[in-house]
Length: 341
Figure (cartoon, rainbow, N blue to C red):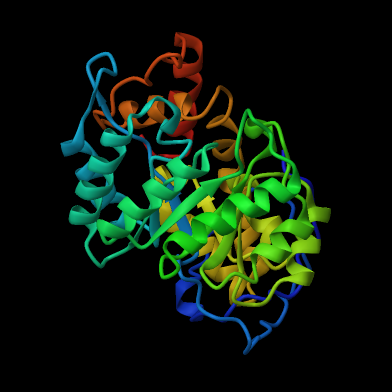
């Protein structure tokens, strides 16, 4: 569960109050003042390159996971963009990148970009623990006219902090006109990128954002205090979105936006507009969805939920396996309770 934070005046750009239609959540006590804080307009903040809500899209498979279903990928991408997503990460962790070949990834980049066009940004999951591979994938993303790349901290070989800095600056220098989002997720990589390294990397022109997939708010604060307004921080966990916004984050790289993208977008915009109470109502309504989508390794529960809703996304690819019947029943009950099914 995400830690509780006081929701102070927001630091994001203000938005139209019309975006914040009221929706009450019964029996949920609010931990904010009865009068929402006045929006703080920060003129130095720039509009984020990748928007506020970035969906980490699943990769649909056929049959037993032996083939990527590019047709369904196109349909799902279009659906997500029509329902709250400002950008899509293709072949990230949620997209099962460890079991995709590079050729499969490149074809996914191509078909999703063609399906989405200029309606949303398409970000290539181009990260690797091999710097040369990451550079090659970045060059391919640029050749396909994608809008940016996501690069995870190198996993398994666990480089020292200076190795991380050299890794990311080499990638950034290979395609200096292509925006990069860093991705720090210690639970998967086995190593944490220090805030000091993030601060140094934020000085590189095309390193424009970080996905902070950790509940370490001390690190988040250090990054926010020491990086320019043009460097944007995204929560890497839906349950941390609202707390992170209160500490200067821009938005979220979301999984739950597969199902409630419009409401997540509304939550972010309501908070930015100063309506913290309504933003909290939305968070409370979907807090169980945020947690239950990670009751097993991501994206097992997400693919289960999508199939229950009629999406032919197929199973995860080995070594991931389908959710057992009791988990499927739990997810079905949750979707029903939220009136999503």
